[in-house]
Image 1 (cartoon, rainbow, N blue to C red):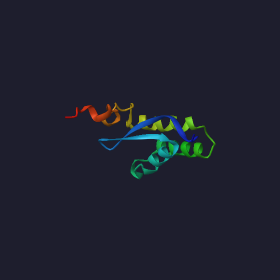
Image 2 (image 1 turned 120 degrees about the vertical axis):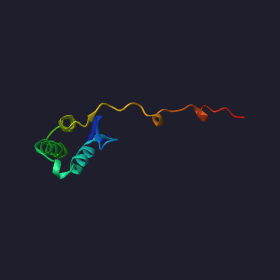
Image 3 (image 1 turned 90 degrees about the horizontal axis):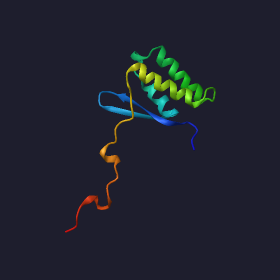
Image 4 (image 1 turned 120 degrees about the horizontal axis):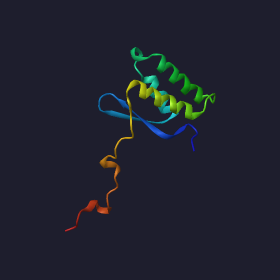
Length: 100
C-alpha cells in the first residue's frame, strides 16, 4: 500500500461544474501548485508547505489531509462526497434487456 494515499478522499470544486477528487498527497500538491497565482495567499502557502513537509516525512500524512480539507473549506470549494452517479452503479448481466 502506498503510504502517501489518504484514508478518505477529499472532494473540491474546480470551476463551476467540475469536482476534483484529492485522494493522495500528490493530488493535493498538484491541486495547490495549479492554484492561480493571483489567488494565492497565506492560507495557500501554509497548506502547500504542510503538504511538502508531509511528503518529506516531517509531518504525518493526516496533517496534510487536514490542511487541504481546511483549505477547501476556507475557500468555499469543499464539498461532501458526491452522490452516486449512474455510471458507478453495476447493472445486472445483459443490462436488463430481454433477448428476442
